[in-house]
Length: 314
Length: 282
Image (cartoon, rainbow over all chains, first blue to last red; front, side, top):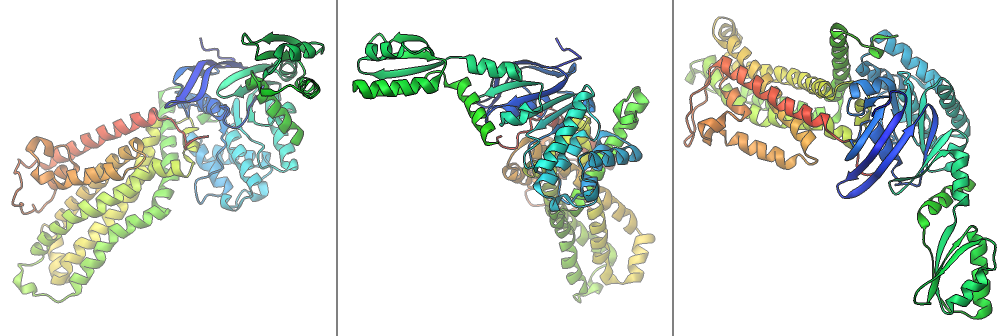
């Protein structure tokens, strides 16, 4: 059922031939800023392209404020999309670029001109408005694309990695625009592969990995959920029962299951760092030969760890 | 609130659609007339003029011909080549790239993110390319026609044009060349949205069009050249193996061509409506 007050992904899957884009996505997005976070190739852009009708789902349905995404004539009255592609029609100035597409929207000359300058001013490109886009720096091109996406003052703004290439000053300016628009009750959807970037902006996040939404909610809830979730480690070694018994003395260990063949065990721990240190100590002390150590549930945690690591670098 | 933001009612919808169509044509006309690919179109349109110009400047025994009306027969043969080579390949360069080049440039999404019906978008892009092609070939055809008549002198040429059938013939050739641009344009637009690599389907189309004289009568109707040839004011000499069919009357050719073009555009628009835009992986 389409809800006019939300953006809704209803059991949405997208396959490119046999390659999975996103799978069984069930997601509702309300007003404010929502972050789509995940590593490169996790399906963020696919989800955004599905939401803006550039792609049609293989299964399921996407509605934006009650409008199906295969109705561009209605959808793009209220949706603006700043895609990740750093490309422009050749030979245009910044002004011509924004103005020309506003004319395709159907705006009359005067309205198109007013909206064009308003959006150019908003992203701080007033002085460069009459210059050709081909001579713009990466950050300026990014701002020009943001200006084009917001020019028709959309109710829903979709931004694929919008802060890429921006210097700190421009980043702060553009971020302020998104916050202002969110404060006006608009829907802002921002993708990033850097959790920290979204952390400072978004009210909610959806965490994606390999085409699946693996966690969603308030950003702090997702953090707690990730950090509280025990990690499973599979160990194949000699004298598995002895090693497992020694490890069980540690507080962080939730559970240990010995393999039927006695040649290994599966441990669930809340602190993987301590677990690996302890395992190393025991192995060296007891002179145990280890054949294999493998994280058994690498998906969600690996994604989170990846994002956290990137956060540290950011 | 500006009109584009909240259209209500049929009149306003109609006006909005018209503005969107004009907006699309405005943006695409620039591409069709000023991009590098348009240079190829200009070359194809005007290179024959240079050849005909050399021919016209070379002294030849005009007294062995009856006058400009014989020049008109020479022109018909040239015009057939002009349609089959210049108009055909210009259509390939101009109309295939309406979507294909924007996909390669990764700029098509800007169009697809506007609140325009995709059918209307396809029509606007097609119309812009058609205006560019038609303007170029109307000028090219007129220039070649006048150059072919020029060896008989200005007085004979003026007499043939304004007191004889010359001007009417020229107008008929111009209608034919515009319909040729429209017909091949529609087919190449369709090829551009159906195929990633248009070379093979374009080659197949060229062979099909070239083989038209040899086709059975009912299959002749499924080609652009059939409708165009029926419009030639001076009929072509028949080939040795040509299958002779009933020539269509002029009005039927024009209506037939328009129906054919409308059908092809309809299929192309339907394809564009259903098109997924993926520039080749994320």
